[in-house]
Length: 402
Ligand SMILES: *[C@@H]1O[C@H](CO)[C@@H](O)[C@H](O)[C@H]1NC(C)=O
Ligand SMILES: *[C@@H]1O[C@H](CO)[C@@H](O)[C@H](O)[C@H]1NC(C)=O
Image (cartoon, rainbow, N blue to C red; front, side, top):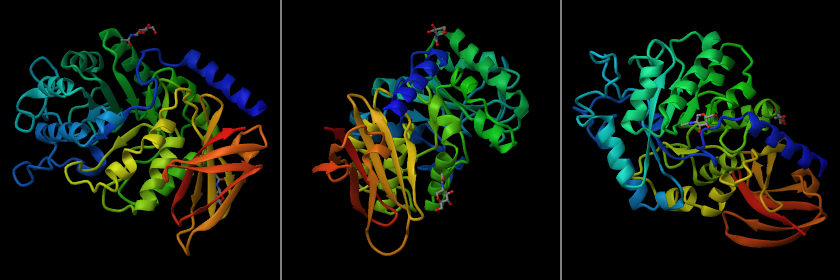
């Protein structure tokens, strides 16, 4: 209980310093182009998959048609390679005229009319990672341009920049966004670049200026990449778990569920662990062809989404680490808890994993468990919770102390 109280106090202390722009009170949910569509600008040969107005409108329509919007996915986010290679005569950023013939404002208007939101991408340096114009000399103008276009989220990347300047430069962009008067979710790549340069991110300063931020490497379409991120989060949780809370989220990067590499078990594991981490849920997959086992079966699991979106916003932590398993838990509103038992062994069949209730943060000798993927009550557990867990898989439960 002492642990829980100090956790809650920590969260309250941090909210006082947190960015006060009113948005992202729970982790943002939606779709982001990068992992799946990257910098494909070849609309002549690959018109369905190139970075274009057509692609983002297709994804917006699918969010609505397939029921993603109804369970909370609302952002359609552009990543790199949307812009023309040059600014216009007034130094304003402009979209590539062939791939976005109606411009970004029109795209934002169309998505808004579908009840969705638009995210865009810029870079703190001289050029984006893909070689498009960077924002370093035009930050105020770019913030105003995005606001004028009706943009709802900005991801500010950090290629081709002076990383030691980020601790002053990113907060400048925070001020410019604020000055526009439009609430815009601010996604910062700042700590990941500092980490990559051997600097120690100041997460309190980052939380005072950003709504979400990337801590670690870009995700790729592989289970190893997912495991690498989970291990980074587990082994550095003391550095950045305490600053998470309403308006402030650590971002382990996109969901690759429904892409090419993850099995169903592995996909459930990514979804469960991202949700226990209170991570943004930004899918990067082709919603026009996604298999329903991954879409309705995993990404639209409302019981798991409810854990991610819990209003207390406490990021989960690794609480038990064995050679072949890990256990994560987080406290939720109404004195309930979520736990994920993760079988990290890619060998043999299901194995029994058990954990003491008190390791999960539960100050009670018994708790009722509900399995959030099987959608069923598992009954009452005394002192320990245990379950059989598939290789590379998880059992995720919501626990109600008795
Ligand atoms: C700008 O910052 C002030 C002070 O923190 C806050 O009250 C206001 O809501 C912010 N506005 C926007 C658009 O972020
Ligand atoms: C968990 O244990 C494994 C060895 O069994 C170790 O390699 C890993 O670093 C540990 N992780 C953390 C976060 O302590």
